[in-house]
Length: 118
Image (cartoon, rainbow, N blue to C red; front, side, top):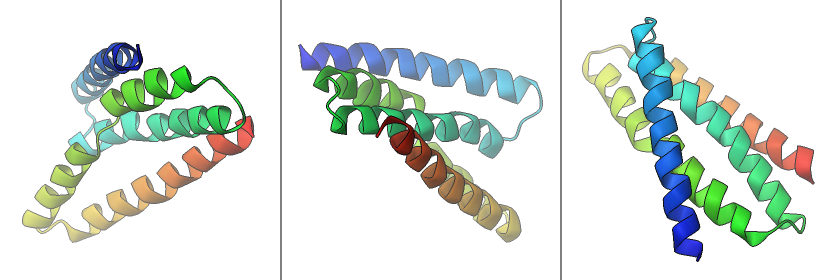
C-alpha cells in the first residue's frame, strides 16, 4: 500500500512541477527562478508533513505527500544543474545569490512548517 501512495503522490508532484515551471517560464522567469517556485513551497510542505508525522500524525501522510508529492514536485538536481550552468557562464554572483536564497529560504520554510505542526 505504501508504494502506491508514493507513486500517486510522485505523479501528482511531477505534474505540478511541470505546470508551475512551464507557466513561470512563459511569464519570463529564469530557469533558476522557476525552480525556486517549486523548491521553496515544497520545503514548506515537507516541513509541515514532517512535523505532522513526528507529532503523531498518520504515517501514510509521509509516503503520499513527503516522499511522493514533494519528491516529484521539488528538484535538487535541476537546481544543481542551473547553478553549474551559471558557474560555467561565469555568472558567479548570480550562482551564489541563487544558492544562498534557496538554501536559507528553503531551510527557513521547512523549519516554519515543522514548527507550525509541532
